[in-house]
Amino acid sequence: MKIGIVLVLFIALFASGTSAQQRCSSAEYQKAQLLNDPSLQNKVKANESFTKNAIKRLRNVRAKLDGSYVIRIPVVVHILYHDQSDDVSDSRVMEQIDALNRDYRRLNADTTNTPNRFKPFAADCNIEFHLATSDPHQRYTNGIVRKYTPIKTWEEDDQMKFSSSYGDDAWDADSYLNIWVCNINSVLGYSSFMGGPKNVDGVVISNSVFGQSGVLPSYSKGRTTVHEVGHWLSLIHIWGDTDCGDDQVDDTPKQSTYTVGCPSGVKVSCDNGPDGNMYMNYMDFTYDACMNMFTYGQKERMRVQFEPGGSRYSILFSKGLDEPLYYEVPVPDRPPTWLHPQVFPNPATNEITLDLSYDSRWIGKTVNLVNLQGQTIKSIVVNSRIQKIDISKFSGGIYFLSARRSDGEIIREKFVKQ
Ligand SMILES: [Zn+2]
Figure 1 (cartoon, rainbow, N blue to C red):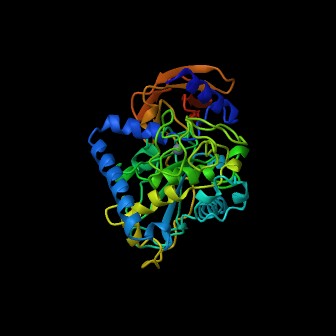
Figure 2: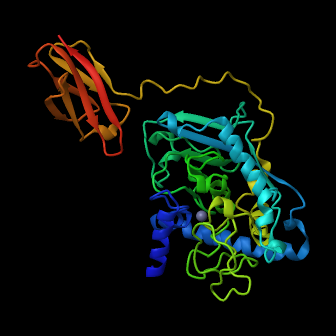
Figure 3: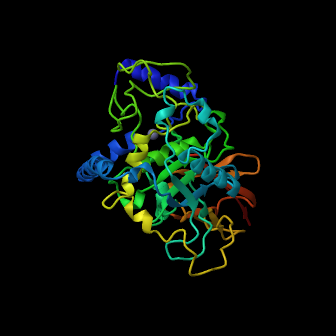
């Protein structure tokens, strides 16, 4: 990596006001997945050559790729929350769906900010997004799954996509766009890639930028999700993820790297004068208020995925927006109480049991037994999910079990010694 790029990245991280959150890590994610499983490389290549050939073929025989029909995509939003502050309301979900439809239909009020030199390239992609009305079992749904999780922060490692790791399983990716909204640590969002495994297909969005009323003002128009869904529909960053790289789209100018903040005027790089960089494209890293267009070339690339043989063809046959066959009473939305430490018996005489079976990551961590004066009377290292602790030598009174993990998870449980 060139020093210049490192410097730009550094500035991007700090200028964004998110201190350490990168805008998007889809390219890095794809690279890591391909390293991990080289067999994916062939699938990615096959998808890319399908895309290229289909665009060439269809462009010549008909105008279908110009968007003569509206593509409707069923969406499921998986909201994972640990604290109240992580929770995302239904109205924020609606704001996000509105933002997707606004930008993919070019109904955004800020089309007026598209410079005249690029206006002829700006496209209504004729793609719409709707919350699912029918789940994979054809049961009633509002398209939103809200789930308490003992995990406080997430990494870009797909753990949020599995119930077995306290996330939520994907709905059939052949029929739904899966969006996971959670407290992700270092990035605003990332997307799966064409040819990737089905069980991790979809986009992950930080709850700080989901919807249009998140906590980061520079990213409050829902365009992190617009950008990530662009990747999900096969788009590549506008600079091709390398210096003057290729995004496989003809009508986006080459540019040297991503754009930081909110520029104005013509910025020339990679001999792309006189028009310069298309930094207002949704597939750049510009602030939300300063991006406002997809091009016809990007539209073609996305829409060709819905042709026979394309990576999203099956979505056209989804039952996700049908009338459900079954209506069931929804389960009340409450944090399940078993996902917390249990201490018993309480009061106790000789021994207490600390049940940590909800989260094996406590094994190897230290738990302190503290008296009412705040003094640690005993420390133990957890070696079992059902941990027995001898308290026979304690004098009678109230004590606390106290522990803290580096990811912020804590234990604070009271017990009485008789
Ligand atoms: Zn991206």
